[in-house]
Length: 336
Image (cartoon, rainbow, N blue to C red; front, side, top):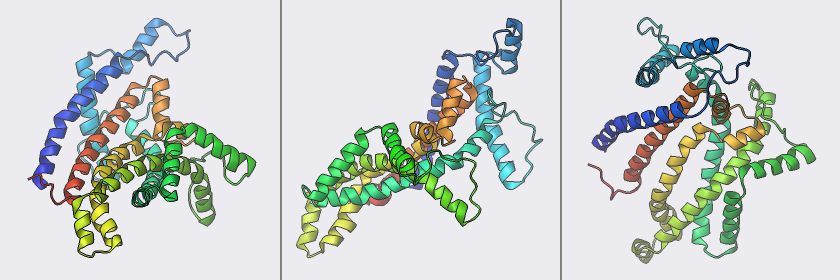
């Protein structure tokens, strides 16, 4: 397993380089100019100087190699210095700078990341915890009222868009009943029991919207996997040996059924860091999704390039994690 993991990590390096080149090239060729939002009274020669100060006067390959150096070398070294207090080199490194805010992109991401993890990450975890038992029970009691309810829940949860669900919950619980706030207060800091309760109250609506959406999707995969395993010969053999239904279901069937579902769950984890763009807009959650939207609207290429490539890195990483989990869940799978 260790040698397989190392091989995959080595193979991921050229893969990520190709992805980074494609992302950088596509965004560089996309329409949009960082000086387009400036007043029209600014002379063209001043606009050109502004473009050169942003590095746009250099050739494409120079800008691409400089961005790679900033992303893979300068930013990790700077973060290590901040977290450990060590001094590595001179400390004067050229970082990826946002055109819109003139701040390092890594600092902007670290500022928004806690809000995204609080809302989107917790919603994904709650969705998984709902989907797995719901899918197992629905498959084990096929065509019962539980299965019918789970099917209806999945169809509604996956078909109805999150912006409609979010607005409906806001109208019911925030406007009509006035139980919960309509807008997420990003500046709230949890310092005592009262602020903790305020944080929980403002998280209920966005977490509920995203958790229902995630649970609806994953529960269908879980149900299909459990149904497929319930008809296998090893289940009949285990029952013939006198094993209890709980042991058969929770030990044998559940473990084998998780193998295909692990792929869905693992590949969904990078979406947590990407943020739920629509839901964050509805509830005014100042997370990574909103940061990406603002970067696109302002043609902030360094910000958009870094965020997009970071999502690609997470997808490659969690693909590897899913493959490793296959070997843990199924002893028949061997990579060495």
